[in-house]
Image 1 (tube, rainbow, N blue to C red):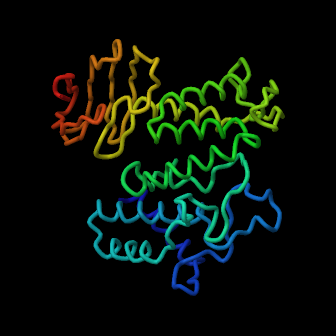
Image 2: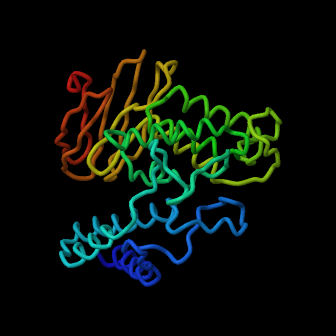
Length: 304
C-alpha cells in the first residue's frame, strides 16, 4: 500500500504519458521494437505495438488492476480497467501463431523469443481452451524455424515453453542440451555451442547468467506450477523420472514438499504462513484444501 503500489502507479502514469492513440483508438507507443529482432538495423522498429511491448503493457496494467482491487481502490480499478480495454489485442496469425507485430511474423531461427513472452514468462495465456491452441501453434512454429541461431538461453527458454505444454520428455532433453553443450564444466553458461555440435551456428564463448537462471526456472516449472490460488504437482516430468522429490516455495509464501516413489505420489506437505484456501492439482485430479497455519499433510488418497 505504501511502497509497491505507489511505485507501480507512477510507472503506469509514465507509460500513459508517452502512449498515443492509433487510428483505431488503441493505445500504442510512438516507436516499438522487440528485443534483438533485426539486430539494431532500421528494420528493428516494428509497427506499434510489437507483441513484446503490448504484452508488457498488458502485464503492468493487469498487475495495477489486481493491486488496486486488493487495496479496494475503486476509482483506480476503473482507471486501469479502462486502459486495458484500450490496448491492442495480441497480434496472432490466421493459423494461431503469435507474431512479432501487427504486420510481421518471425520467419527465421532467432535466439530471442520476445514475441512469445505472453506464453512465458508473463503467462498472459493459459494452457487451456483457445489459449492452448495459440500456445501449441506458436511453439510448433518455433520448432519449425529450428535452432540454427539459438544461444544457450534459447534452449532454457524453450524448456520453459515445453513445461507450459506439460511436455516433460522434451523439456528434460532440452535442458540436457543446455547444460551439456552451452555450459562449461564449472556450470558457467557461455551462450555459444562451443563444442560445435551443430545445434547452433553461434559458437562464441560469452559468459552470462540469465541462461542458468532460466534453466533452473524450467526445472522448477517441471516439478511444480503455481499461482496465488492453486498449486500443481509434477506437471511436466519426463517418463523416466520414477523417484522424484522437491522442496520449493510457491505463491503466497507456501512451502511445498512432495515426493514420488516408483511414479506414485507418496508425500505432500504444505506449510502455510496463514489460514487460506488453495486448490491442489495432481495428474488432473484436484481438491480444495483448507490450509491451517503451519504444516498441512496431504495424502495421496485425498487426491483420488
